[in-house]
Length: 284
Image (cartoon, rainbow, N blue to C red):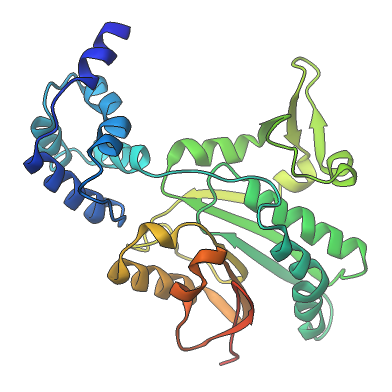
């Protein structure tokens, strides 16, 4: 197996192969790849050639044109899944202290579902953080909001990881101590391994989806959307489609959170800037 991996790494990537792979990345996943980054392509795809027993990138391109399952694996291999608990903490602080109280005030009587959508959820840390914050808000008296989370991602492996909700000691470092005690269970079998408590897991639904094509997004009508560290991978045309797909699934008065470097990409009619990287959908 090691011999096969090393051999596959040495397969030459020709300029015409790069051009076709870049076009397929945009077609299948919607992401834009610099055609000068041949090392990125070989680093991400050499295992796909090995898995399919191929000896050229030209053959792999032909496979992608006919094999639906491999197109999915191709997209998963190219996408980056960097996340952590309480990443960009200022957004969660704002949500706890201002955003959720505002949504609570709009609730006329009784209770209502608070739908949170983690649009590029990776292995679940972003979404579970949002649920922790929502439960904190309820503990402060915002009992009218019944939180539920939908997490979507193009990658099946990270969806499975999010559903399992198992994390290492290093991965949970960003969670405050009081919230660790409340929302994490320590493994009885393995030191340094933790799982999100059933109280939160039962509030989360995970599904595969494509933000560009809209496949897998049916039925989402969210109050809070996290769309962070994903727009930077798209060109202007694809980015506009993604923003439109997200905007149409945000309820009037709801909030959209972007990455701090992506806020300028999210500006469009119907979204007003509340804080840096936080937008409100104007009431229709």
